[in-house]
Amino acid sequence: MKITAIRAHWLSVPIPEAQQHTSDFGRAQSFDATLVEVETDAGITGYGEAKAAVGSAGTNAGLVTIIEKELAPLLIGEDPRQISRLWDVMYNGSRAHYAIARGHVFPVLGRRGHVVSAMSGVDMALWDILGKSLNAPVHQLLGGKRHDKMPAYASGGWKPTAEVGAELKSYIDRGNFQAVKMRVGSGDGTLAHSIERVHAARDYLGPDIAIMCDAHGTFTVAEAKRFCRAVAECNIDWLEEPVTADDKRGQAEVRASTDIPISCGESEFTRFAFRDLAELRAADIFQPDLSIAGGITEAVRIEAIAAAYQIRFAPHLWGGALCFASGLHVLASATSGFIVEYSLGANPMLHDLVEENFTVIDGYLEIPDRPGLGVTIDQDFVGRYRKEV
Image 1 (cartoon, helix red, strand yellow):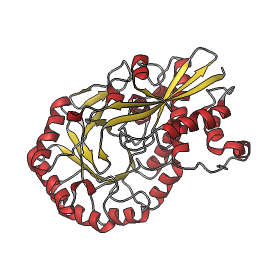
Image 2 (cartoon, one colour):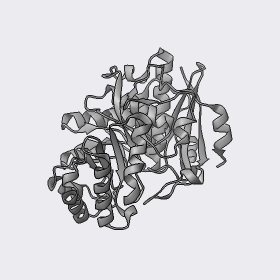
Image 3 (cartoon, rainbow, N blue to C red):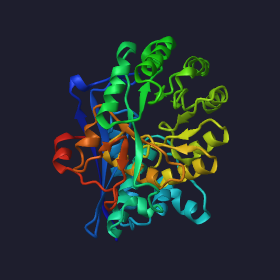
Image 4 (cartoon, rainbow, N blue to C red):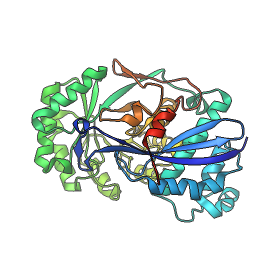
């Protein structure tokens, strides 16, 4: 089997004003992603997803160019089933032959950022092709699923103090979720407001619903410590990205100061960043975004680090259907996987891009057994929202 073509499509879906939310990323007026399409001479096409931003909105023109002009020429004519080798080809570029022969990396430059994100989308598509060619779900190729269904948490939570409890309760009612995540940090204006909102959420929901808090990396180390002390009695399940990803030692300092579990990873690239987090004892939970960190291939390596250090694994799944499905397959087969993120913001890329539904019932999400990533692209949706580059 040979790769015959690789295409990338920037999809940008406007979000109706009534469904838009505002956070420290700004007002979410669209949902953007890059859909990657890899064709083969066997008539099998695989799909993946790359992201230009952690949030839902972002300019994806650069990703399209990297995929079609830089990565595609490296892969055309190659066997798409040689996924590990092709990951190294993309990561190391013109020095890939050294890396493969000598057994360690020789990247030219694109060690982080858009190049790795572009690789992520291509890598997902290669796994999709492999699964389809064997009529097997990706989780089976990774060793098999450990669970038929997994608990999910509802991810959202932007409302101010007086409304956040009701907002989170509305999430619970939509899938009988037993866990919810809310945003805190700079979007609140003050540390005091973040603290106040968490207390309001706990008071409204009662003691039995798990609450996670996501600061999007916007606290200083001192603010994160003060936040943890001030919400200690709220018994939150984790504090996500308390400080910027560029301050791993600072995050380790925050973790050492509290018994609230610290999670992070959506802003990190490749196993090397997660290795550093593990060695610094900076995290209790790893949350790689498979559309950013290096795809399925790299996520498996990241999870192996997590398992070795007794760190739990809960991928960042705020993305489209390909990102979600890829994360779900890795999570279901992972030693340290334990919970699924389910976005409750306006997310047409999750619900409308593919024909299948990801439905949460009684707080659980069933792990699909369809071949490959298990999703069918709605080509009319792609044609409607494809943005010219």
